[in-house]
Picture 1 (cartoon, rainbow, N blue to C red):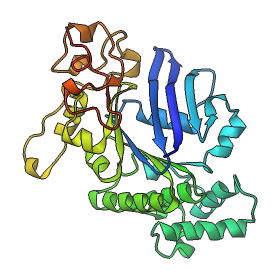
Picture 2 (picture 1 turned 90 degrees about the vertical axis):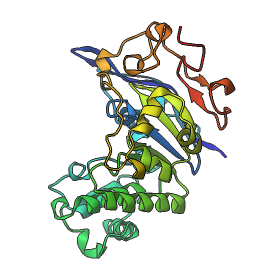
Picture 3 (picture 1 turned 180 degrees about the horizontal axis):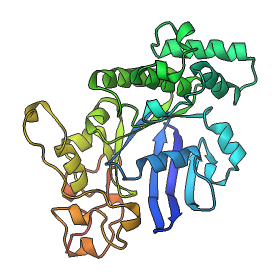
Length: 333
């Protein structure tokens, strides 16, 4: 299977009054054609910054970016802003979180969808509108010929999320990035959106980078999962391997905190503390050490590299499983 997207040591740092904020700090992964990769972690882990870096949404003198982002064989880190704009919305589509705030409240759905189409294709406004209506129908919007002229405030959160998806798929991109697409929706609508998104992805033959903090969602949609903490990936595994035997203490903590049928009505275990602010991340140590029940002296003085999970550390290292943890890769003393 061919690789569609590959990040190598991708970094996005922000210069602030508090110092350098290393929001995404040395991230490496790949997505194959037609594959679904889930990027999971708590808020503040760097997931959204990584996604926006792929889309080329950051620029300016106070932003430092390095590493490579290779899409369809082209290194986007060397591409000029015009080239990034050409790819964004055409070859790469993004579904943002918080649908209620993702639209211009002063423009109709029609105006915003037609503009998204005409930015990349030379056709009449009538042709673009017809395509937009068909895209709305594809995502299950009732009476799309009428609803397309509504303003965003006339639609519910679930409907707006469907409109966001329709905009993202309208140009048939090869890569879809969904950033917490179900966070603001109730459980019933979440399930509908997930089924819709997965069905459309398969229909288009697109790859999907799915960003979430909800591991329950990951089990339903993803092929592989990368767990991210404080700007770095700490575990890579297939969904099957992670759910059957998570190895990194942070991954285990996220799985233990899920609401399941057997835990319903019972107190859930929680990971103590919180993700550190990017400007407060300690250097030269494991970033999870302050919250880890297994942290030893080495964890507090040396940052573990992301390396292949050895057979002695748990299940066999299948499907490219990797860990950044001294507990399995060298010992914590």
